[in-house]
Length: 280
Length: 173
Image 1 (cartoon, chains in turn orange, red):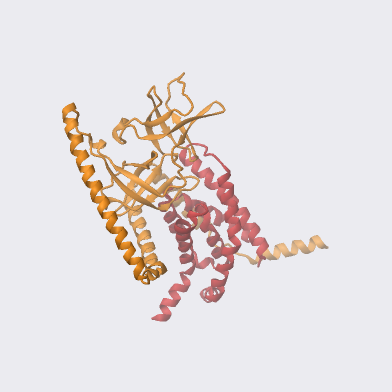
Image 2 (cartoon, chains in turn cyan, red):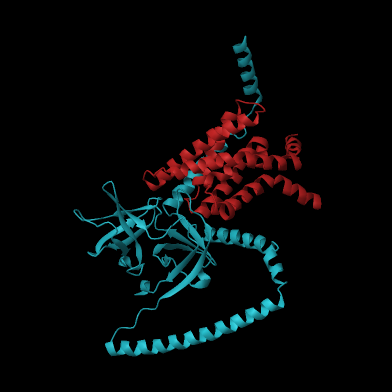
């Protein structure tokens, strides 16, 4: 009796519900998605223009909402006691004097340095232009490791520029939009960077696997590494300047991997090396 | 005029709520937790269940492509997973009538896990390499499952406040 009742309830349910969408529309949209994936992976379409428009509009929308939120901290600033302001002025004056002194000292050192370089007949050093940028959207997922920064064509950033912190390399610029850029991190599966390793300057290519452990590719047989050997960019291919530290060699159960010098999941500020080497 | 705007806002509310969740996922939650790209499936699941007419397949395609552009995934990959999950939901939906929240939550758990595994498989195929599965993927699933009731609660409030059920009824009539 119970089973009979259950069967009748199930049949009632099945009878009353209709399909939400037709099978043909599902087939059409699934085929459309697969076609889009194929076109994107094979680079048949170049979606950078669409990406640029969408990324710009997203951040413009975000800026619009953020700028319209009342800033309580600014209101607090309107009510500062006079004594505090006097103290602040004194402190700032002192700082200005100190800065001027440092400027004078550094100017003197620069002149001295140039004279010494001339004496030694050294070649002039390549221009090293860095732009300090902020990570405005951490778009890292389990399958993609990239971040969006708040500088783009407006700051002279170009595709292929190196992204680094004071510790070492974190990735490279792969897409440049009008006011924003996207940095592909070194642990992304699609990242490939030519490097040299240790004191023996062994050549290799590193690639990410979407984890913290970065893999080594194209190594010669019987190459031996020491634990904590430094890995740095080789400059091969002309994209990165040579000798930018990337990470250190680590060994685990006879497997070798590279441990990045930066914590790639906690990046806030990045220096973009506006690459002079590319034009070399 | 004002009524037209109100009506337009009401019928586009499911889409707007999904876009809002995408924004939350990029700018707010990513600083604390990694919900992953399938986070918005929580809202898709809710609206497909209650007002499927207001969330047609082209909108799901646009949402998927939008996410792919933000997260730099191959364009179409997220949409494909969404279609697959909606397809499963559509077939599974026939089996129950006016389900309780527990039943819905169970269906969401099953669909979300299937979606995560399918997304991993799709990315592995695209990259021609078996991608590693680590603990972060498990955390991602658990976080989404934990936040589903919260999202469901808020979406249900809007669903009732905006009388979307009546809108659906009017449209069907």
